[in-house]
Amino acid sequence: MEQAARWVYAVCVGAMICGIVSVLSPAKALAGPLRMLLGFFLLLCFLLPLSVSWELPEIDWQEMELQRQQAAKRAGEPFRQRLEEEGERQLERQISELMSQMGAQEGEYAIYLELETEPDGETSVRIRLTLPEKLMQRHLEIQERLEKELDFPIVIQYKGEES
Image (cartoon, rainbow, N blue to C red):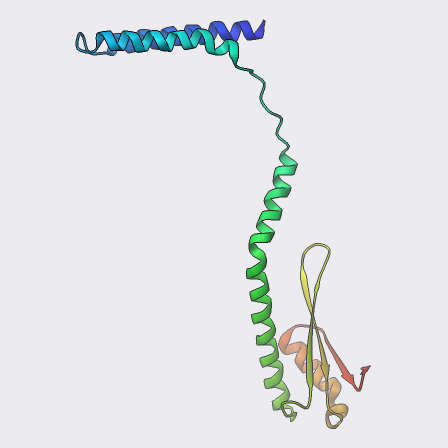
């Protein structure tokens, strides 16, 4: 019954459109071709609703959102990697400057940056620093200063042990 109502609606709308176009058209110059075109349009209005299925496809919005998020992650991955690499270089430069101010020479210490991705997608940084024995007594001062300046947790090691 609903399809019959749609078919009647399509025919009525088609007839109204044909009537409006014929009233608004120029008088005699295009009357023949216009009548043929309007007749063809009205014929399509009669036949097309019978052949078209009116069911709309089911759309899974959650799946579409998941695909959008995955595509955004794939597109943003190279940029995120570049930012991480640049951030690592900048952190290493800052640590090197602070260590030289505290009396350590380049090459006497080793810097290890550990990037960890949390389950919620956040990335956290942990800095592991291996110091020479001459700075062993000042490790608390070095750790406090680096954590204050860099705002990251610092782990200091001597010959494989953490302090």
